[in-house]
Structure formats: C-alpha cells, structure tokens
Image 1 (cartoon, helix red, strand yellow):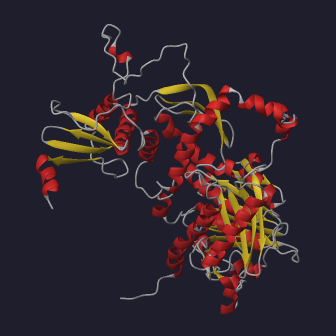
Image 2 (tube, one colour):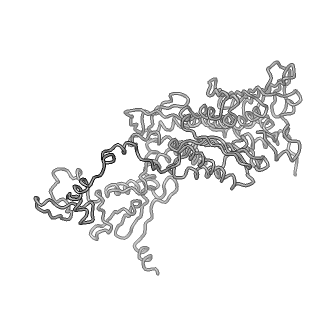
Image 3 (cartoon, rainbow, N blue to C red):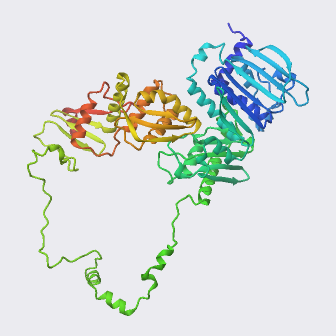
Length: 610
C-alpha cells in the first residue's frame, strides 16, 4: 500500500543528500553567512563537528518571521520564479541546508536584524521548534548544530575518525575562505585557534591558508574576454609537488571539481613538469550564470558549462600567457656573455703573422690532411701496442673471497641463450622481466609486480609480529605541509609508527622526521610521505581495506624495483625465491598478474601453430 511519508522521515531522507558528514554542514553554514553579507565569519568546532558546529557572522541577520520559516524545506529568499535559476549569483538558493541540518541534529539559532531592538533565540529538534524566546545580541546570526545524527545512530556510526572528519572540515573552510578573501575568517577547534584570516587580497589569502613559502612562488593569471574572465594564480613549475591538494577552481566564486579543466591546466604546463608532479593553482572563472548549470549535484561542486571546449581553451591559453609573461616557459638565450668579449682571443687582432704560425703547426696540418679534428698521430718514440679483445680474469681469487668480485652477469654480460648443460636458467628480458627456465617449463615474471608483492607481505608480517626496525636519521628532516595535509598525516601517524617511521609533530603544519623503516633510502623521507598522502587522498579512498594495509601497499609500490632496472643473476634468483615464499604469489597488491608459466607442450604449440 502506498502512503505519504511523515515530514520528519522525509526530511531525514532528504538530509542524507545534503548533510553527509560534519563538513557538509560547515559548507552550508559558511555559504549562508557569505550570502548574508557578513564581513567577519567565525567557525567553532568541537569533537570534529560531531558534538558542535557553530558559525557566527555579522551579516544582516533575520527577522523573527524569517527565523521561524528558515527551517522549512525549500524555504528560500533567492528564488521566486523559474527564470531566477538561470541568474544565480548567491552560494545557496534551494532552501535545503537548514531544513536538512534540523532533521539530523539539535539546532540553536540566534539572530537579529539591525532595525530590530532585540533578536530571537530558536531551538529546533526533529525538524520542530521546541523553544523560542527574545534575546539581546548584536546584529548578525549565530547557528549551532549539536550532536549530529543523534536521531540516526546508524549514520553516526559511519562517520570516520576525528582526524579524518576534521580534515574534511578544514577542506571546506579553506575553499570558502579562498573564494572570499575580502571577508575575515577564523576557525577554532576544541578551544584551539587554527586560523585567523584577515581580509585582504587573493594572494594574501593564499599565503595565509597555504603557507608563507608560497609568497614568492605565485604567478598571476589575468585574462578578460567578452565570454568570460579568468583570474588567479598558478605556482611556478619548480614549486610543483607530488600531492594534488593545492588545486582550486572557482566558477562565479563557487568551488568546483573538474578533471576536464584540470587537464587544461596540465596541458598548459606541458614540458615544464615531471610526469608525477602537480602545480599549485587557484583560478577563478567568471561568466554569465546562463552559461553554466550549477544545479546538477546536491553539493553543487559539479557543474555543467554550456560550451566546455571554449572554457578549456581559455584556461589553457591564460596560463600559458601568464607563464610566458613571467619568463617561466623555456626560451633560447641568444645573448653572448659579456665576459667572453674581454678574452684576448677576441680583443687582439688576427694578423697574417699569426695565421702563418698557426698553419705551420702540427695540429693544423693533421686537421688539414686527414680531415679529422680529433686525429692524433702516435708518438714515434714509443713502440706501437697491439690492442687485444677483453679476456675474463683467469687468476685464482678463491683465497680472496669470491664475493669481492663482480660476476659476468653483474658486469652486464648476461647470456641471452641458456646453455643446455644448465638445468635451470635465469635471464632478464628488456630489463623488466625475468625468464626462469627449467627442464619442461619456462616462467616469465614481472619483476616490479613481484617485488611489490614481496615487500607488501613483508610489511604486513612485520607489523603483525611487531618486529619493525626503525633506522634513525643522522640529520632529522622537517616537512612543512598545508593544514589539510597535516591533518591527514596526523591521522596516519599511528599506523606509520607501527611500520617503522619515527615522526614527531612540531606544530599545526610542521613535522620532524627522525627515523624511517630499516632499508629505506636516506634523503627521500619527504618524497615518501608526500606520495603516501597523495595516494591515500586520491587513489585508496574507495578501497575497503584497513588503513595499515593501504599504507603497506603504498610503501611497497614506492620501494619496489621499477621496470627498466637491470638486475644481477644473484638478485634475480633472490627475487624468485622470495616471491614463491609469499602467501599469494600470483598477483601484486594492486591485482597485477606477477608471472605466467608455460609448459613445454604449450611452447611447442605456439611455435608450430600456423
């Protein structure tokens, strides 16, 4: 039997699309404060937003009637007709934010209009007003969301750790604060101030949010056309990093995610960056709202352009123009060094006497006669020496220890054809694969996939046995991160410690690396951690694996020998032995096949099959 759902149940279902975690509420409340015309916005967080998310602004506030009505679904002051949907300039417009928050949390609202002598306090629970009274406050609004998902325990259980949820909150705060640099923002978490952002220019806001080391690494982008305007900053190529956390696109001041436009940026940096590095960019695209549809996703972070190709072309051209203006793109320097002009060979005249002396010289004669500038005649006073082909050493070195000498395979003199006398033969193909032959079979091994499997199981076993060994660094290394990445690293810190890392938090954004797992190459600590952060943020989020397993996968991938690496016969044999000692030797940790074995009959069939 079909029935109409009660309002409170319908609101909870609808809230699931808008309020997925505390960060979702942060985004909606901050955007409401911006729409209210605030010049100062304060965000207060307790227990990573699970206990409290509060936003205080000095905007225009609400009347008593509007304060009561704002918690109803689809209650909005920004749309009155269908045509208004195509001219939206505000951040919010659908009237779903406060209704969704009120359906899944306990809400306290304090607000006052400048024209009213007093404000109003409203308490909401289960989408219903439970308390209302006048209150004396300054003009503006304070909205506190308490005990998120208190009435939906199953949803609350799906929330991540406090460190993970706080990272998402900081991301949303950063995006809104970046979009509106003329507004003062502050963020307090658990009675600790994380941000105090004064109003200023966009460049100042970028430095405030991402760190003072960005101040000298930014290149301004500014292009105006009849169709759109592109403004903002990109980072210099030498400041590119392995992590993709510092990339921001805004369309009409609204943060968006667009892999299509990201591709345009990467194309503009073509030939300026290594393949695995990403430039910083904070780019604002302003165009007629009729040319873009922002109402295609509940979070409004995915949009549609009327003409994607035009926007792509403008973004790419604007960045290339900016890089060229600041002499970042490669150029050929045809100017002669001034010091060269002072050399005697340049300053002194070239006389006939000098010419004759040069022409009579031995070097000139050899060049003239043999037509070879590099030819040098043998010295007649020394007996000629006959060159002989290279012969392997035949001396007896058994008493000196054979391990002190390089084998022929280690010298790169590997045989490509196994001898019939050897029952087992191991050779390397294309410096990427190992061919292991036996009497009736041959096995082709992917050396990188095999080593990834070996290292992965090694890290997992060491962690389980609690036998990880830390290699202290002679010179501890300090790594400076953005607050978002710092929050992520703090989330991973406990598991990194169990794998052998020794990392100490210095302050909000800086960490001291004091040790790494034994066997890791010194000097690459920062790169290792940046790669771990990058893979965790962008590649491992969808995998239903425990955190420590994701980290083991990432470290195994980084430390494994790569395709194209030459191996000695001893190294290949050791790799084969370790591989077949693994619990799962057929697949790498990423699901890549490690080897394939062919029987003699299969090989014969391949060769005889015409």
